[in-house]
Length: 92
Image (tube, rainbow, N blue to C red):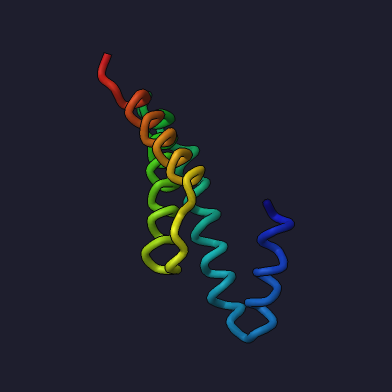
């Protein structure tokens, strides 16, 4: 993943907006650290469900903001993620 992020980060830094890029990187780093420090038992399940919702929202973002209509396989993948979220959060 870093190999894909690194050229983008280098482009932001070289364009004079380096402080904004570094601030974003620091926020993402802290978000990852804070997530590992949670002490309640169901956090892993909630964090995984959040990832599934994020995937669905990313597909909708691409459609609504970037005006790129998702193809059939993207809709199927988003549906599978929602089914997975439902299974993870289902009360036993």
